[in-house]
Every structure is written in C-alpha cells, then in structure tokens.
Image (cartoon, rainbow, N blue to C red; front, side, top):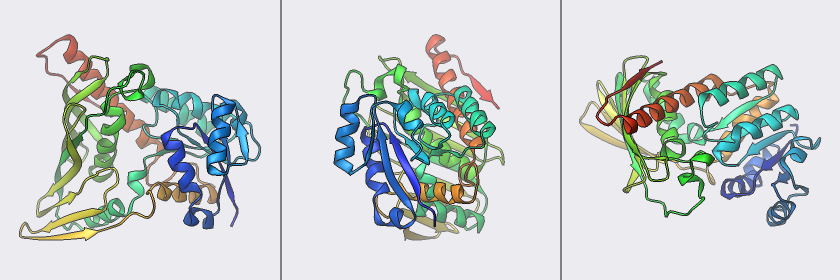
Length: 338
C-alpha cells in the first residue's frame, strides 16, 4: 500500500485537530503520513511542527504548494481564504481536502471545481459528518424504508460564542456568520438524506457585525420532502435533527455534526436506540475515504460529489440573499428556486 504524504495549510484549531488525527494508528496503518506544515509566518509553522513532530516547515503557503514531498494538502484556514488556498495547491499539483464550508459562495466553488477537473486533480470538501457511522447507518435505514417515505426533517441548533473582535465567526471579511459555520451541516445532511434542494424560504436577521446570527429556513427537496431548520448565535440548544416518514421517524441525537446515537421509531409505536460510537475525533473517516479515492485514481468521492458541494453553496447563497433583502425591506417575504 502506497504511502500518501500530507501537508497541512494553516496552524489554527482545525489544523491541530487534523495533525493529531493524521498521526493516529488507524490512519498510519492506512498509509497516511503527515510530513509538512505551512503558515504565513515561519515562527508559527516552526512551533506547530515541533508540537506535532512534523519534519518539513514552510513559512509561506506557496512553499507548501510547491513541496515535491507532499501528495495531498488539508486546508485549515478561514472560509474567506479557502478558494485562494485551494487554487494555490491545485496549481501546485496537489490533491486537496478543504475544511468546510467549501468556499464562501457558489461562484468561488464552481471556479475551483473547474480548475481541479481541468488539471485532473482530486478535490473534496471536508464535510466529515457524512462519513461517520451514525450517518452511514442512517442512510441504510432510509434505503430499507424503515420509516416509509421520509417527508420532513426538523431541527437545528443554537450556541452563544463569546464575542471577540476579529474572530472569524463575527467577521464578514473572513466568511463569518452562523450559516456558513453551522448551517452548512444541516443543509449538507438534509441534501444527503432527502435529495437536492429546489426551493428556499428563509427568515432571519444580521447581527451588529453584519453577519447572519439568527435565522430559520425551509428547504423543498427534489422528491417532495421538506426540511424546517434553524441556526442561531443568540440562544442555546444542542443541535439535533428528526426525520419524519410515512410509517415512523428517526431522531439524530446531538451533536448533529458528530452524532453517535439514532433513535428509530418504527410504526409510531416502538423506539429503538442505536449506539454508533465514533473512533477518535471522527475526522479520520473522511481522510480514509479521500485516500481510497486517490489510490483508485478518482477525482472525487461518491459520498460528497463536487457538484453537490457547489449546490449546497448555492442554497446558502440564496438564504443569505433573502436575509439581506429582508434587512433592506422589512416585512417582505421572499423565496428562491433553483
């Protein structure tokens, strides 16, 4: 089995999480090797490399993109930088796994996907939730029609982070806002379970920093199902989701981005809770899928096709557009179709 050499672009929280994950026994046994890290400053990259035992240190992102020792790059920078950093790595001939959200809008996403395809390079959004045991099992249950035809998904989550000036979540220039940070999980999951989104109705508000921080939205899916979802930075509630079908329902327990339990109600009269633990942090599953695709010469993964990542960005574009329109014209109801 050929080793796949990874580099990490960025040295923040998610970069550290992935550095730990890439060095776990399951990933090492699968042929993953963390060989390089890059930061905007040599000092930051050097400190990160020392902390995680990484041999190759780059004081610029361009150096990592040009490193011949690196096969694939995990991008862990703020959302506003994803497109530029994906482009840099793809132009350097690297396979790319980019932290969610894929980009800040669908236009950026389409441009990057076109570049990857033109260069015949692997590209994937790091939507790790799709690869977890609970979500894989959930898809099997729906295929087996244990709740009949799924018609409705209801759920969401709310959290109240401490405000810090410059923190990306409150910074429009860095791709902040609760939709890109948390709403993307709900939209991606409902797209996976219920099909492509055909229409959006959104209601919400922008916070004092100009980013969305409190909203609800209804998604109409291609097979007639609907999702009723919310995200907020103004209150607190653990993020979960419930699927309602014609002959039962399934609750995906919180946290929705890393679920380990499903409660299945068959026939509306009996519940069964399935415990589906995650190994390690849970981020390794997506890396294994990416490496399997790379070894098979594939340019994307079946679990999250690139066109779907673009479509999900389009849904979030439409939600954002409706929220901004409502801010300009209070009381005006808008809806968007695809």
